[in-house]
Image (cartoon, rainbow, N blue to C red):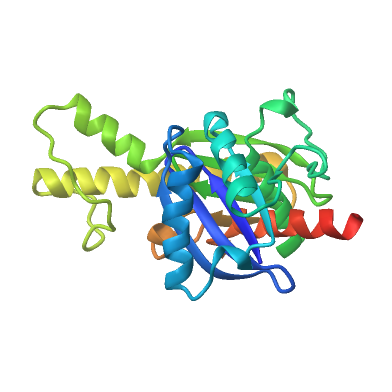
Length: 262
């Protein structure tokens, strides 16, 4: 089994993947904290593995993608100390991207965005826009050859809501959910906030996708990923497909390619 680790700004996702089929057997997430030690990860993971009927002995390899450099060391120690293997790090030899990064500063591209591009092109052909709903919401264009061509970084919806509540003393904290009905004129504060956050975000998604489509000027497929992708699916036709585990799938593909090339 492969333990795939996606360390993001908000959460670290661990997934147990059957390498022969890329089937995700279990997945868990924990809040990102660069101070969390390998020992803490190990205690937490050992219990969760046992609940799913597995043990640390079932893990033969560990692969990590991270956009939080300070979290990497403890994840590498986790792999070495508790899984008796050297962690493979996405973007670092021998796990180079294997795709063209056609932007002004290739080294600045987040590992998750590169991994998503790899996975998206393994699953879908042609020009693609990948929208990843995370701490930030990213829109990434890759062309029909699989080359990464650039994209957009926007504040994530939770980040936008947090900023609004922090800056306006009288506004309450609300849950992010689809507003009841189709009206965009709220009759109370909570409804008005919900409409502004939700429909405002839908408008941003649709507007940016439309502008990207015009600029690409070729047929393009839009792939959505991230935990909040399904929240918007019912109220927009901007998405052609939703791939909730795109980053984990990309890590499994990268491991597979590196394993075959040995």
